[in-house]
Amino acid sequence: MNYKPQPISLIIMGKEYKIACAPDEQSDLLQSAQKLDFQMRQMRDSGKVAGADRIAVMAALNLAHELQLMKIQNAQLSKTLNECLGKMTHKIENVLEN
Image (cartoon, rainbow, N blue to C red):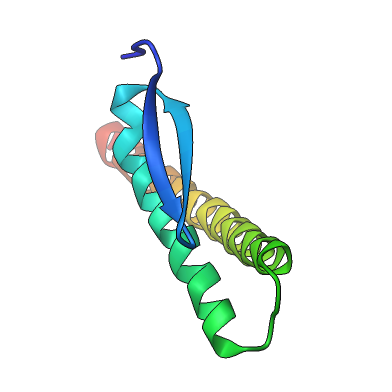
């Protein structure tokens, strides 16, 4: 379902951001904003990164890295699943032929 985008208010590091978003995607966007806010606050509180812009870039890099790792893991899982399904199909075909 694709509805007309509606404005949604997100709070990240104490600042409000209004983002247009389809109603059926609002929950995912809120969760993403909460995850970003959490990561940024952790970095700020660690004292290792100073400045909101640097914190935002570091959080974005961390999330991009996490996404890349998940894509690799997903590809590996898909490959393993396809191999298992191929073996099962082969076994089923052998049973049906005999």
